[in-house]
Image (tube, rainbow, N blue to C red; front, top):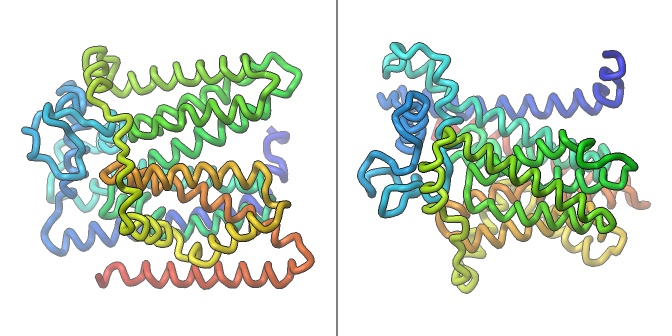
Length: 416
């Protein structure tokens, strides 16, 4: 036990990171509170249309009433626009995972009390899994950024994340869809694959020794694809990183990737409650690739995507151009730890542009953590130059202003 509680695992950096994550959670909880309080004040005690569909579908599946979205029992066209369905009523973008995650906390609440009169209490429950996902993604981001860029880069990335309006909104599911689950899954899949590839150089029996990381990779793939079918792109991406980083152990890398993919399929199958017919029909109607390259010919799309990225983190208006310019002008910054997240972020932004409907928002949100790691890595490199004092003061001054702006904007929420 004493070997586990070491200064490396529970030191000053960990407690400071925990404090930032607590601040992130507090902001997300404030958003949920403000939304539910405003809804109660207006006399609209029930959940929003999209959330209500997820709760009803998940609750129905938990109680043996049919598998979510295979098809929906409601007539096509009667559901909110946020719910993707084809002419046959099948959900084309999501497995039952989102509905099950949304409805699962309600199983702990007495069914007789699930009524509008007590909604101010139980309406918190469907948000809890997504609040947890936001915290887990932040913790994962800090862990990865710290390993790649050191303490300075880790705290820059985490500070930018913990006060990101889009990430807070996504975790609170505040007037948006719960894309945070797909963002967490895709982030975990990419960096777990990178971690697995690095362990392949250890002189051990890699397949059996890596079983924990194989499970983690499989779970990450299942969360990403189960939350958003279009996130299937992370599967070949994970294989690409495995083969690139372990060129002399490619057979082992391929075996690990196949094992993780098989586990992911089993987990997604479990979301269909192992109903083979519903699973096969759901996969047959699923839209794994709905991209249209015509979006790249529309100037307004570039402007909108740029606004979405800046909305995710307004500090990127200054930091991202600086990071990109530094990356191209300074060869020292062009190493794998900076290049890999930058390329994944660029790919996800491109896919967000190519998916003009529901999937596009998921890709854009998923790109934000990779953008933050890319930026924090470049800034950490700049903080090691002879100009370190000026650079450090400028960076943390900008981040302090960004935090104050974010908090001020959050305070304005209850007033409109």
